[in-house]
Image 1 (cartoon, rainbow, N blue to C red):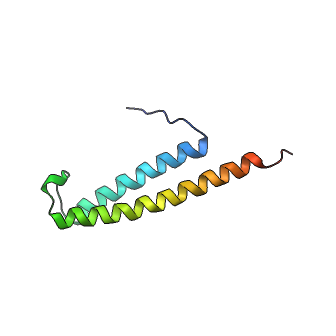
Image 2 (cartoon, rainbow, N blue to C red; image 1 turned 45 degrees about the vertical axis):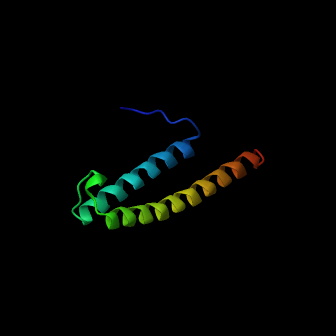
Length: 81
């Protein structure tokens, strides 16, 4: 399945990188703890740990997104040469 991402080239790349990061985080987490892919089989502690790590990752990507939008806005305001 191919999903078309609307937006600038930078935004499209951002979405791809973010998706890869969250996927990598999930699989590294389950492999490191030898967990089932379905979280219904995880302990409450594993779920809490995963959610805490995911919150940190999400905050990092929100920061990166803000930086990307600021850079794009700055580029839009730059005088043409």
